[in-house]
Length: 279
Image 1: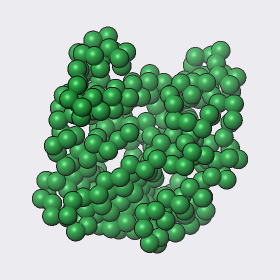
Image 2 (image 1 turned 135 degrees about the vertical axis):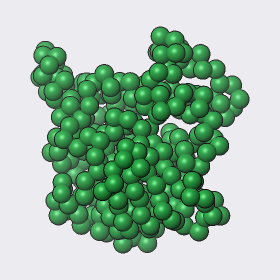
Image 3 (image 1 turned 90 degrees about the vertical axis):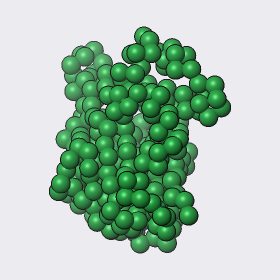
């Protein structure tokens, strides 16, 4: 039996709130211990994490006290470097990735205060979110969990979204964030705009731009590689990098690997499963 790794696109009405819902399930799979790792790139997306079966432990960066037992629910902000988690045995977990400014609007959390860390859900959010998590943990399957999440978020997102800047599509979310800062009347002060963007997204605008560019370039390169037509030089040019070396430096900062290694390991190494399914 093969592991299940799913990238779930949210319903269209939540496309500017949720980046994706990712599911990993290795229950019933014969995996070696070395394959029970989960390798993630740096990301600008905060995460709601639900441990449905088994346990998850943070390996890189080392966090000896960060373990999520079965039934645990955690919330994290953006991650400024690549991370690795481990599952000591069979696991089933769901990861909900929010656009950072959307989670800020929904919860009021200053996203700069939760960068590079996981915290228990109850330490950050109130009873309604805790009740949602309990219902998702008790749901019979992943489809029911997604439905519970979307039904919970839809009216709340409708109440706080700004229709003048959210077009209901993923698009370039970093550019959208810049537009929000300008719409808030702070665009005339670079320092104030940067401060507000850190509050909304947890990271400076420059890093967010690099992360978005790397994500889009990787997706294009992976899809081209699957067709046997990849040229890293062409990908660097299309991604707006000054040259292939520039692309490689940023890829290493975000993933710890060169672009060619990312493509190879995404196809061959089970621990890089998230690179394989990301869209």
